[in-house]
Image (cartoon, rainbow over all chains, first blue to last red):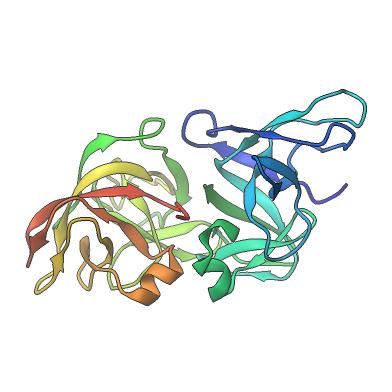
Length: 133
Length: 141
């Protein structure tokens, strides 16, 4: 995979990790942006616009380690890959695999699509984002 | 400056401070409402309505101390001053006010912008009164 996020500052209680269910046979790199995929509380690596953001994977998972639960960081400042022009102060949404973009009004209205608030301007590069799920 | 916030309770991990960049030659009192001003991660004191709220200063900075980074408290309960002619209502979101360090009732567009929300009013206070506000910067819901 590529474009994983780099967590700069853990906020809350050690980043307020939340435990989710993941598919046992799927590798998940540390720093992956995770989205909800099915009920109950199951997540996969982010894939496209319009998905509900769940957090950032806190450790690496391989295809053969048998892991079916993963902690995702939900409160932090992280450097994320922006696929377009990320704007200072605007909410950011998932735009693809481990990428984000400026949220539109529909995304913001559906609050759970929001990844976080852009702390800097970015043009197809990394952008510091305040994440607080 | 006037109307600085008074932090009543630190929440999260000691108020979840975030480091931001500030101008070296500018005085910033403790308790100042700070807003995102420029990229990257650079803040100044609030001065108008509907700005991008980032947190409350936890220390005082003078014009000559050479400080260029400050920690902002992002998760707390604080006593904030309501703007002149405004009434902040129990349970309703508030945004940065027209005057420095004051808050006004948030509008629909402010709420949609989310980053413009300072917090949720915990009491009803009008016209330059002081009331408690629950602050959790960046909270998406």
